[in-house]
Image (cartoon, rainbow, N blue to C red; front, side):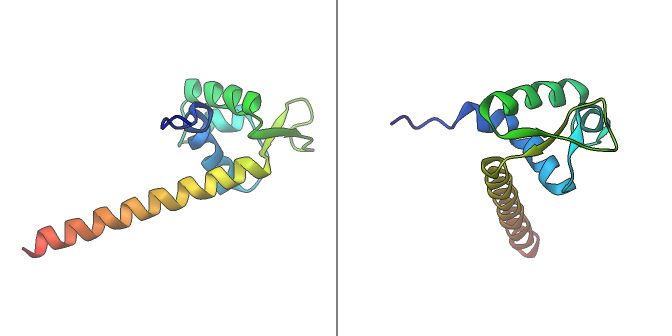
Length: 103
C-alpha cells in the first residue's frame, strides 16, 4: 500500500462538497456560477468526478437539455468526511487562536 491519498478524491473533493451542500442536482453552468468554484475548477473537478464514479447524471425538469449531476453514494461519503475534517480543523484552529489570545 502507498501512503499517498487518492488523487481522484483530492481533485474532486470541493465539487462533491458543493453538490452535497446544495442537496439538488446541478448542471455544469450551475457549478460554474456558484461562488465556491471557479469556471476552470468546476470543469476539471466534474470531469475527474465523472471518471472516478463520484457523480452520476440525473434528469432534471429545470434543465431538460443540460445534464445535471448528483453525487453517488461514494461521493456523498467523501463529501461528508471532507466536511467533518474541515470543521474539525477549523475548530482546532479556533481553539488554538483562543488560547493564543488568552496568553
